[in-house]
Length: 222
Image (cartoon, rainbow, N blue to C red; front, side):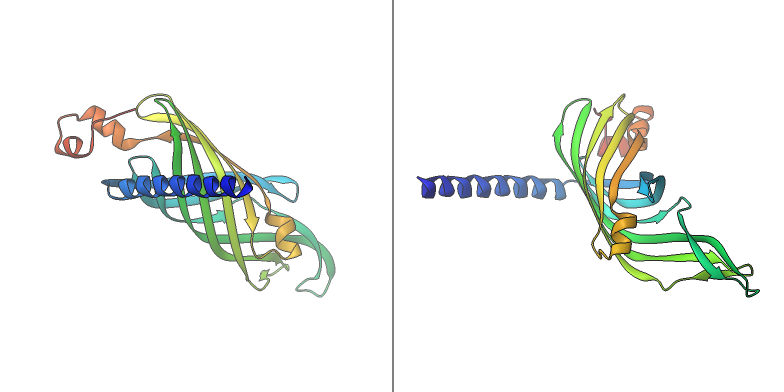
């Protein structure tokens, strides 16, 4: 009985994998459009709300699969107190600021879609560096930059208000794969990214329904 259930499980797994690969093949063979955006992702560092900004550039396949590259950086002051000897030889306490930035590859696959609602699974992998810096009274002193590996799995919910605008929310987890005690304590966190979405290609299709571009890539759709 256990062997039969195991065989059925393997068959079902293979069937799901084949169906997913077939869908992926169809999407990749479709005419892609440009996916370009600025984004802000909110999380917690040192028990304080922080913002990580980013830029993204990639391709979108039938609005069901987006993939590309980007760059993200810490956009909020985050610091610890540090005892230093300043440029004048005086011991004092100053703010030691955390900094990081990383290049990332991302993919976002839509697994459920209705006329207005959409659920997708975003995945992001990043590689970059982190360091700390403080002012000694005359100049900025930076620590040695260290390797940073970031993995951010999550889920995205999106509501389409009209053909050309909508609202969305990413709920992700940020994991620092080079998990020294310092990196783990500072960077591992839940990540929230509220979004106001505007699809400029859909606006163009609505404004110019008879243009050659609309005839080739349009029309606007839900």
